[in-house]
Image (cartoon, rainbow, N blue to C red):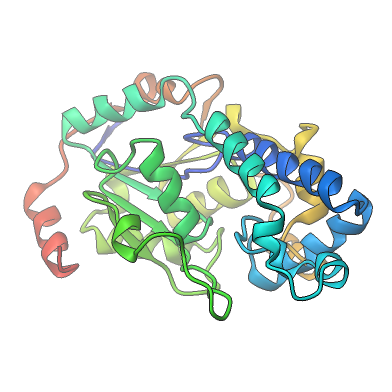
Length: 299
């Protein structure tokens, strides 16, 4: 085993759960039903989804149906979410069925929680969508902090289904980062560590992306662990995500310029998140420092 670790910082998507599978099954179900009900070919809808996702900077945008040009042109003046309720229901049902943690994640996090280790999640998914998964996967209270980008703006005259209070986490502290901050900016990771009162030497960072997670941790001087089991780019489902991603060609080129040709992880989780327990000895985080950081955050 390596040195004692008292702070675990972990990516969420494809590290704690299979985000690509969740996204693919829900989006695919909605798209199939939309093609059937609207009579508009998939090849017409997909580029429209991509433009909408690029505009709102997320492939999880909840209000896409009412912004699709083909639907607006074919059904002028109609309430599109009501007309295509079947597509929305198909999305939700598929998401509900696919939403689960990877095997061993919950047990490992509980074990670390029992040691007094501080547990922090850091994701590039926006606040609302992250919050949904944290609540429905019973991670609220298991993770001490969540850091994510802020939400996109809501369309004019539209509101969420429930009041703001419904979406609040009960125990986990959810903090938003400055808009536009993305991995692998090591300054964000160092900011998270500083805000929680930790030191880099007592932290470990886990993530599935070599280019974003591992490269970022190494630049920040934080012990890095690659969740190889979560790598999804070669899977068939990923191709649909590529076709509708919010990443523009300019985004991709800009990211390439930041990356080295090769990133070599220090540690690798090959099959399971639970392998962390074989690599590190986890210890109690300094409670006094943590309490001070809670007070500073107003909680």
